[in-house]
Image (cartoon, rainbow, N blue to C red; front, top):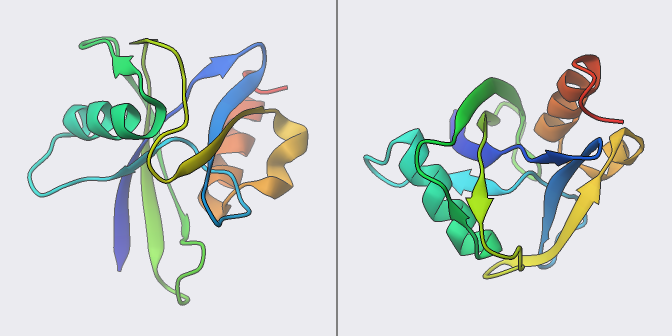
Length: 131
């Protein structure tokens, strides 16, 4: 089984924007699950609006990669497939709904993120984007 998620990768000064949900310990890239027939772009726009109170600028998104790993807190064999995009947005970042904290993380913070995010951190570090 695979959980289909869309995520935003936003990098500033060698750090990546991450979020922590209420009651959770690990940080995750902002984003979430696709609803019914949503496109990647529709999912990204909706999830980022719901979680961070900002608006993705239409047409500004760019595919970065798709990554898979064991889903945190799920039984073995349940994978999360994270399709990642960069995008420009307008508005002020503010935690909303289930998001308790927004934090900029660097590579030294890798042990505080989910399994799939660890793979993404390695990818971004190899590309020279994450310090």
